[in-house]
Image (cartoon, rainbow over all chains, first blue to last red; front, top):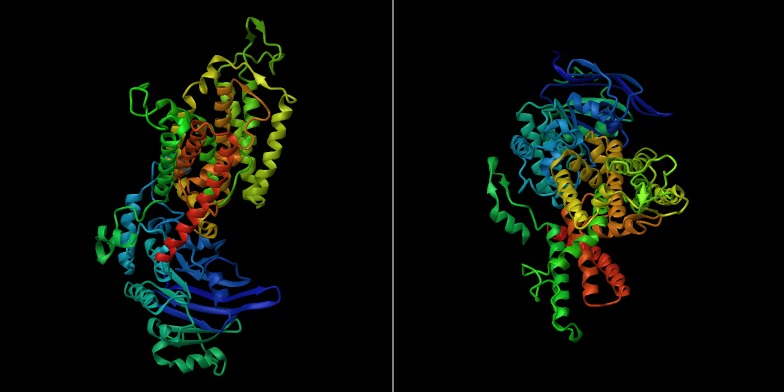
Length: 259
Length: 367
């Protein structure tokens, strides 16, 4: 077993003539929280789309949990254990919390009935409560449908989903971009809980304070390339901004450079 | 207000979580039920007060004709006259919950009734050979009941399957796909016998729709599909697709296959309605089931099924069907012309949606 949960080697994605991602070599240790930062169009989302199987890279390799993988779609990545919380939340508004957590992988009884097999509500409720406790998510009633929940609660449900299925890697794409102060704090607490439990995480965020607070390492993307690999406690916000804007470059960064 | 009510009932679970064991807020079906009670009340009141009605009761047995306090004959008629369209509405409900629409069910009823009936004809009418039977020359007469039933079901399922495949795999809007089926299936209904009606079914076939049988079949199917929608993976995925199709797809639900299944089941239910209807009428005509699709959609909409998808239940549709039946019976009871009946039906369809939207907005506001 390798010490890395995720490793990409020269990951490249071209959309026709547009080089959205160029030679991205990235590594994530088990239990490590890494932030990905960069200006709009720097290649962050493109990078995430390759490792979550939404798109297939033009070139390069992805190694996940010690084996080389090629995901045919988001579901394949998910089955391998990569769980992504996207900006556009993949939740069904009219279903309640357990229904959403277990959507597409319901616990069932009477499986011989095929598509008409019976839902095991009891087991799903019990596991939902366990997952919410694990992530520290507080929701007044799990029987509530998602549609009437606040943005923060919805985000929490989406994150709790990752905890329910013992995923090996969680990816969050700007989880607090649309949230208020309190809700942001709630989501950040969940991220800390994941850290305590040693769950690896990739966090995409524009919020410097949040990144400094929650992550061990900051990887900066610029113009489709990884331009810096920084240890969060060794750098200041100003320095990171300098890397993001291109005022400063780290010529000899390496995936091994930061520990 | 609802929120605080439920909070009072909530128990604190592990990790300080509040877990509400009760239903989370007033279910929309309750409003439909209250509307039903209100409409019945209005007819009751009008019956008692209108001078020409001589104080007749709409709902209660005032003449001692039955062994209960209710006017059982009226209650039976109320359900009987909506049972067959109600069966269609069960399928239409599922389609609407996925965010689709099915305009073809009325025509599927017409085509299926013609085809099924032609396999259910007797050999002899009043002692003479039934020479006008569709399959007289082939000698396919006096067939066991299973033949027309299976043929009929097959027709409905096939039509539904075509709908489903078109919608799921060519990605044309359900409105267009089922509109095409609506026109085409009506064509099949007319082509099958070149416009001739099909009559004289076997005794066993005629028994399917005799007396209160349509009601029992409707109730049986309603219970079955209530359980399916509430307690099976099929039901959950149907709601999920209507609620957020992208989320459903990302969760690994095979959306295309599921949509195909939903439309196929809707076609099957239309076929059951066709068999019951042709059996009840002892004849099938190419014009059978015209406008049934719209009545079925109206029942679902009155019952609180949202045309945006994701919301509603079988119970709602059943209550919507009952409201339909009460209105038809009520107008007959008040000896009012059928014209007023249609006007009232139209107003209630629109009113139900307006009220529901208003309620939704208020609920969203309060949170």
